Amino acid sequence: MVSEWMQAIAGLCAAVVAMVVLWPLRSSGKRAPFVAAVIAIGVAGVALYLLVGTPKAVDVVADEGPATLQQGVRELEQALEREPQRADGWALLGRSELALGNTEKANQAFARAVALAPDEAPLLVEAAQARAQGDAGKQFDDTALQWLKHAQQLDPASERAGWLIGIAQRQRGQDAEAAATWEALLPRLEPAAAAALREQIAIAREKAGMPAPADAAAPSVGLDIEVTLGPASASKALPAGTQVFVIARVPGGPPMPVAVEKHPATALPLKIRLDDADSPMPTAKLSSQKDVEVFARLSASGTASRQEGDVDSEAVRVTLPHKGTIRLVL
View 1: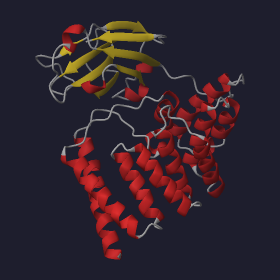
View 2: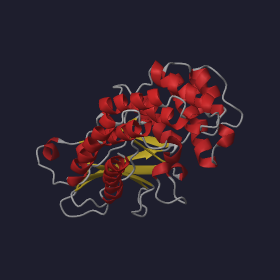
View 3: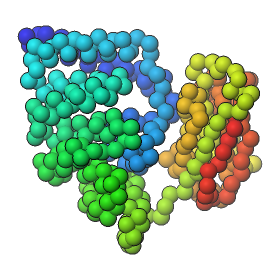
């Protein structure tokens, strides 16, 4: 029985590892699947995903990846039929179903795991995240929030539990409570994560009609951009692997961008926000510029450097800080 379990888990882990290796090789800039560790990827990106419901674009995995993972899932399900009391097995099944995009099955598996191991804080947090991911509005329902609060009781030092509780409170309009929840996290965070979280605290306090904290960081400079295909581009079949680059650079300056994001063309129409997190050089950040020109590039080669056949939108020059949405048409 143990060998069967080890075989199923080993095969499934091999499939997961294969996808983890392959995805970066086929990557297209920043992306953050919701199930990834929240603090590790930065609180600002996850806040946008949970509060707005728009994740960064994700490329498809190599053709053989999902099939391998699906086989591993079937073997794991068979093992769980024989030993249904394995909380770790149900949790692994939940992660695997998430990797396949089967959020409903993932949530069923995580619920089984939580029922078997109700006092494992990391599992409770992971299950709550998956539950929110499966919701059409990316909302933490009452069950998910209950799991998060129980996780925090079990592990008061859990940064992820505290961060997600604050998001759930913001989703419910409990902005003052969210600010208090997040402020309690600040002393335990690294400087970069703390700075990002302070921005969210400032937003929550403003929504609640509360004064900004004395040490509140200045709002980050960013550009809200919408990219769409024009009639000419939309009428053509785009080669597989075509990428979209959204670029901000100094007008009349060097070609090196001060901010750039890369997304698959399949993500169009695209709505993004360029900010200092997208600056390739720390010494030339977007926020340090007075004026920038913004444009999008449709690249069949998948590279940022302009190639024959690439399509550029008309460049739009703006003065920072800039309000409103910049609309680019390819």
